[in-house]
Length: 117
Image 1 (tube, rainbow, N blue to C red):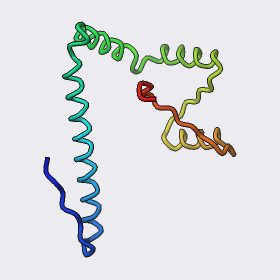
Image 2 (tube, rainbow, N blue to C red):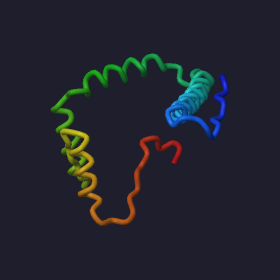
Image 3 (tube, one colour):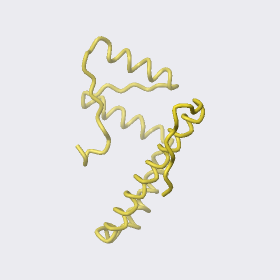
C-alpha cells in the first residue's frame, strides 16, 4: 500500500481535506483486507457455507419490502415491551430520537455485532 505524504503548514484547506479522505480510504482498505484474510482462514470451519449463503439470499428476498412481515415484527417487539417508531425520513427519525431521549443524561448505543462486546 502506498504512503500518503504529510501536509506542510502552508497547504491549502482543500488539499488537507483530500489528504484526510485519502487516509480514511487507506484505513478502510486495510481493515477490509484483514477481514478478507480472516474469512479465508476460517472458511473451512463452515462446510455448508454456500448453502447457508443461498438460504440467506432467499430470506432477504422474502423479507425486504414485505409489509406483512414488518408488521408482524413490530407487533412482536411491542409485545416484548420494546418501543417501535417508524419514520418516513431521516429528519423525522432524528426528531423522534431526540424526543425519546428528552432530558436523559446518559444514552447507550448498542452495537449489532455482539461478538466483540
